[in-house]
Length: 264
Image (cartoon, rainbow, N blue to C red; front, side, top):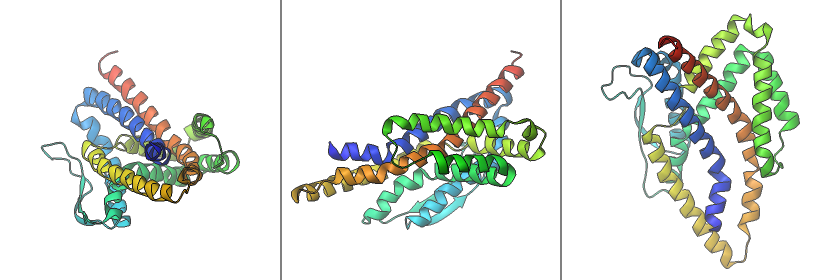
């Protein structure tokens, strides 16, 4: 039970973000498909899919997996697979097995990173405002009860700094909006991604169980250490708010387009 609690503290929040992004993307693509057919989904794939697959690829390198084949974008696959990364790992390596979790979650990291980079390059004033919020308002020693406040405040700060009259007249803002919609439409995990992450998650849990058995024998409290480590969750949630906001905007736009196309 201690290992279950520690696993949730370590990874529960990022998995929760992944789940929410998956739900938002599912309905966004559903409305785009209803409005424009496959072209509606493919229109955003040019940017979103390569960034999705890059997230898998970079994690493969970090966790020592051998990359066999990479397809950043394919538009004519009969199964509808827009891209993939084929990789191998040593089943005898605990490190590489744990890596399966982070490889599967890779698109979330690359998607959030791309959104932040896009903001930095295309709408630097908004990026500066968000950066100042992170520096002044986000602290690693916040209580769990404050996490929702962090997400809410971060989304409010980004929204206010982006949707200004000056930005609406700025062509770079509209390029950024197109960029973010494309990423948000392909940031969530596929079924294969989730299956790969699950294998890594089981190995992480096994590692926690073994660690707690050993440290328990020597009367060492690991829970306090895990709580200290999981203070990074505050920053995870703050940066994830960017992806959640634009995924929601993508859902809203796709729904409006669907309603317009269907004649309201």
